[in-house]
Image 1 (tube, helix red, strand yellow):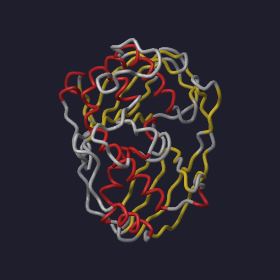
Image 2 (cartoon, helix red, strand yellow; image 1 turned 30 degrees about the horizontal axis):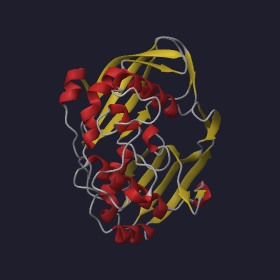
Image 3 (tube, helix red, strand yellow; image 1 turned 90 degrees about the vertical axis):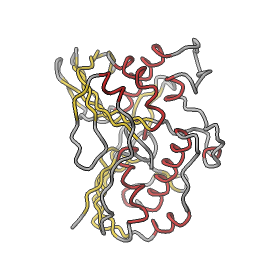
Length: 303
């Protein structure tokens, strides 16, 4: 699967702030605006003219793969080779409190880490200034503990493929951030959740990311056979809910619905062929808004 570099950035609030329940888009907007000011090398006011060389262009206006990946050519937008995943709740936060956000860089996105860290030192969430306090390196291993590192050590770290345990016979799937997934031009709701479209969406995202961050193109797999395997997975004990919320888009000047599925459901069946995809998906997320932290899930093996 894909090599990734998971970091956690912890900030100190320098002014009290009222944050929404899922502040994912606030982090993306704050980092994107700073990165554009810091890294732009062509003075672009709109679309980036050098997206393969510019840190902002590569991460936020990700170009199509040069290898001409067939799957990528079917979609108007490429998945961005990073994930920003807030590790804190919404609500009222006081001046001096700490906020953490996960920053996961996928494959060649690591080459832009120096620009990212420089742009990340001082951000604003809404009108509240925040200052970077420390960086943790979260090795994607089974027992690896987060390690506090300097910016220089983070730059020296290399992306790694996550170590995975053997596939269990049954697993509990927890949706920690809202899952926005479309089937037949409609968003899946808790009462209509189906594992097959969830898994095929995950496969598509991972394969397109592989084409973006690798000169060798997308992953080679029997996608039809895997999709058929996913249709045979049994669901049980669902406890799924719809979390309804909106974010404001400054570019579009309107509120955008961002509701999605949260909760948990148990999966059972022959998970082994699907397991490598499911396992790495815990870092890559799935569905709409994955790069800004939506569609985050975790897996727990059942006895």
